[in-house]
Each structure stands twice: as C-alpha cells, then as structure tokens.
Image 1 (cartoon, rainbow, N blue to C red):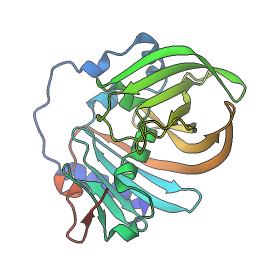
Image 2 (image 1 turned 90 degrees about the vertical axis):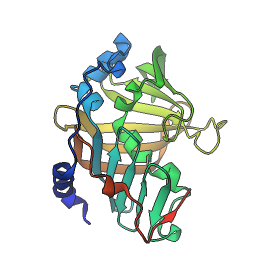
Image 3 (image 1 turned 120 degrees about the horizontal axis):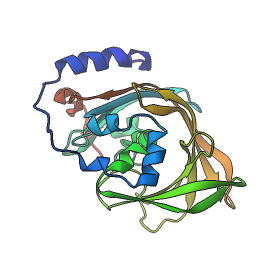
Image 4 (image 1 turned 90 degrees about the horizontal axis):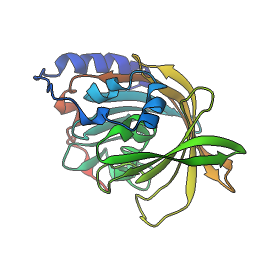
Length: 257
C-alpha cells in the first residue's frame, strides 16, 4: 500500500475504533521540569501527545526510496509497519514479520519496529513517568554551544534503541536540534555515540514534527559521515484507539526477534 494512502486508512481505522470512557485523573506526565517544559512548549501544544492514544506516520528512506507506514498504540505499545518489502508488528505478546523472516533486511525486527517512531516522537515520549529529564551543562557540537538536557529511561520501559539521550536545543527556535545517543539495545555497555539532526519542522494538528531526520557518525564532537536519512509525512495523533485487528499477527507471518 503506497504511503500516500495512509491518511485514508487512518480515517477508516479511527471510525472503526471503539469509544471508551475517558479517565479524568490529571496525567502525571504533565509534571515536567520547568526548563524541559520550555523545550516542549517550543514544539507546540505537547499536551496533545499526552492525551493521544494512537500515533501514525508515513516515511521514506531517502537512500533507497523505500516507503513505510507506521501505526503505534501509545497505551499498550502495539505496533504495525507496512513496508515496501515486508510487514512487521507487535501484537502485545510477540513481535512478528510477514511474509517471512527473510523479507526483513535488518538485524532485528524487535529493534526496528519502534526505532523510527522513537526518533520521530522525541522529545514527547520523554514525558513518560519512567523517564528522568534534567538540564545539564551546555554541550559543544559542530563548534556551537547548545543548551542541553539528559534523558534517562528506566531499563525495560521503552523498546527504543537507547536508555539515554542528550537533547541539544536550537538557540534560535528553542526546538530540538540534535539528539546524541549510543545504541544500547544490543549491548548495554556500548558507548559509541551517534547523532540525529532534526530539520524542517511541520505542524501536525498543533504539534510539530521534523520532516527530515538524518543520522550521523560522531567524531571529536562533530557530525561526520551520514549513516541514513528519512523523510516523514502524514503524521497523525489520535485520541482514540486504533482497531485492534490492525496489530494482529497475519496468518502467513512468523514470530521474530
């Protein structure tokens, strides 16, 4: 299914989703450090993220021009990816891939299925109560001094690539400019730093997301060779659950790690 059809599917799934009574208890994720709130506020009304139950987007790998549609249930971590060459997902119990493991070109489906949704939704996902965000001393990167924040995730609470991120704040816009991290998903002791550049923010219903994210190798506090680049479109935040059948493991799929 081409990525341009994503909006039509999301509308359909939204209409099919069952309505449930909303919890009126104040959400603890709204209680953030004041300095971190300033960064969040620069991205729009971030309370929309806290209120949302579902998240979806389309993306294109700029190096290969392969497309993907991503659907995420924010309340229980269920995920589905419709890609050029494969489908993958998490039905809440297991990670799966279709039509077979050979169709997925990467090292680990479990690692990949939340990779780009994590990158795209920073810094919003860091409002989770299992994450600690604190302001640290300014960081010099590419010869520029940036106001910086350190986000530490409680182990096992989020299937992203790392349990620690350093956020560098754009001095002009106040938005996220760079993210520095080491992939600890496979090796908790890994200290090889990588960098993500966030560019060309676009509004998505009152909250902004980058249109382009570029991954770089780091050398001597500078970004060096580009490792990958992805562009994003059709970003949706939905205040209802998507139809549960969307995440179910297809008959021809296999469980994957």
